[in-house]
Amino acid sequence: MTGTRLALVVPSSGFALRPLVCFPALAPKAVSIAAAPSVAAVDEISDLLQLEEENQKLRKLLAEKLRAENADLRKRLNLG
Image (tube, rainbow, N blue to C red; front, side, top):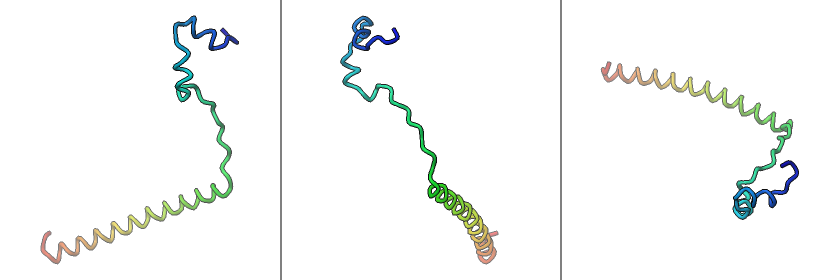
């Protein structure tokens, strides 16, 4: 069937051509090749990764500080 037009094949197969025309979203889409990221985008991603690392460190420090405060308050209130 190579080279045979869809309009000629569809009637012989028992399928209606109309649904294929009405629903173009169901038709196969072309595959696009992504372009390489720009230098600015790479720098921005690098900055975001550094900020994420700093954020994790700060979260750990805050958690440690809050645990210490919580333990101190428990001692003061004789809760254990």
